[in-house]
Length: 480
Image (tube, rainbow, N blue to C red; front, side, top):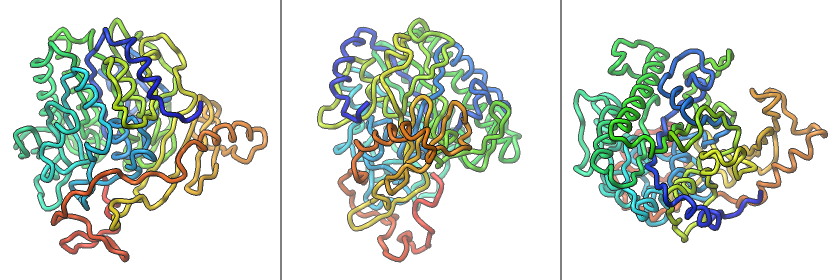
């Protein structure tokens, strides 16, 4: 498969499924690898609701995201790889500013396209790619009719750091602290109310809770949890509980059979937590390009439409969400942009086992962004990446060279590098040839700069500091 724009494919497939126009509930957790989902072989925890969703639908084994927060979230919205939309590295907009933001006038948005097709759209959870102090109505600009968001920590505003207990959230009424509440409960209440009020229209619900991202906390169901591992498990179990609430609400509203539910995560688990999968210890691999950092849980379910109890080996990655959602909605893409994803509807509906992809991609990990007079720029012009097919996985370095090759069928834990093995030269070269279609230089984030703010990161050749003068190693060194 050549790396080509898929606009024609999106347009061709869109009309085929316009009649169904299902609701779409897209759930993307924050920092959770397969080693913490029992349906994927986790042995240190039980996730009964996620497991039930898998049993009632389709569980994917080969689904890729980017290994870090911002690149994955921008790819969900745009249907583009980071080398195209520019958010190759994490950039915490409310914390670092610098005029950077996810610019609704310069980037595509799946919500805006679905809204144009008649969908009611809502978002709840973590955002972090705009600063709501500077752009209070930007969620509307991105295509969301309603929203309940944690903006991310706003420098100079300590209450905004709260993402769990006493959360500081932004809605159409502005930003405020919700004392005594747990954020995930507020998100669920908001989404359920939105479903009640808009049940007569097709809906797109984007649910991106912070769970189980650090800081690790006790939850309403396990308030006595102590220690990092116990709190992490409590947070995962609480997300399982919230999923149960949402599924119950869909049943109560008689919407379940017409709602495609997708469960996934933005990257692997935090490195401070180790789980066990299929009897093997798996350290958290957030920011890493190994399978534990990039190949995340991905489950789809829609009773009567998605076949039940299927384990799919089809290749898919996060860029596929935009074309898939547009296909389901019979919606047209914004023709001003190029898209990298492929519709997975035929796979979801059991009409194709392998799907349209020959390869999937992940790139980045660890932050290599800086603020310059030209704005936020990626330090490396060509970010390291991995590309894989059904069996083999190739690592490409920042100098655009193949450096590691693994046979994931025989070596799923990536222990034996085959890149210099002459018997695998053809495989290596085949995968590497796909990279020839990638731009020679990754794009930088695409935006028109916002006016300077007091909390912006300063531009300095020596180091980067807050306007207040307190030095930091690098603005992206702080965890997202």
